[in-house]
Image (cartoon, rainbow, N blue to C red; front, side, top):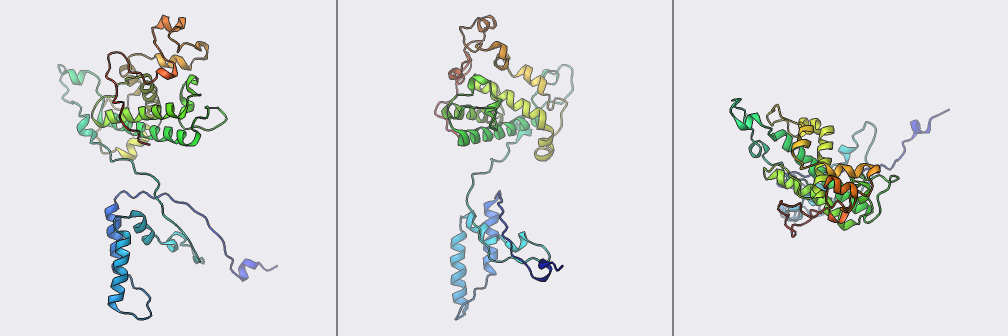
Length: 309
């Protein structure tokens, strides 16, 4: 029996989607301009003047336009670089898909630790949030904020259920699962608020219940993936004996752990300040509408601050 594929070739349609990060738009534009300088156009009446006019039009197209520059430089033949395969008719488009995360702050300066080793040194003897710890927490805050905003975009006001895969809000206490998209966007911003604290060199101190929840999730995720983040993104930061001590951070960064009571089904209702268990623990108001109310004695966030998304 003769294999038809061995006698004649066949055409296939290959569908692929790529996300490309343009970290340096200026470098991309320079590459596109250099490519344009070498372009030769097929013209009926060829002249260098006509060639240069077309090159000038191409330069105008890519000026300040990363999508146009990327489209010009993409090479589909390079994508399908397989022996015996030729690229036929192909179409593709380039469109914006958000912004890259901003460059990392200089955590080595923002969270400079003392290493003098003198017994009399209060800084060495006490706990220090190190540059590596701060960097990992900052990155986790950004990632969790991204995922929380993704949840809002995908599910809106839909209640959280265990039958649907959520990114963040299924990790929140059940009393929050029926909150609307407005509440969830505020909760997503709590991760950004803590990230901003770290980027400013401040040790994150939750100022409301939502930020307590955000910080607990940041620490949990950091405990799971912090080592990989260090290796991939922050390997140049100097090591310290206090690095990545997430359990100790849980002890020093929170005034209390009352929010964790909300995860215990046997304590349902404890979020209500009139609940007997709540009064016994002196928890205060942990109902969902109160999650963004500043704690007593702590400054409130600027209510006019924007949402990132």
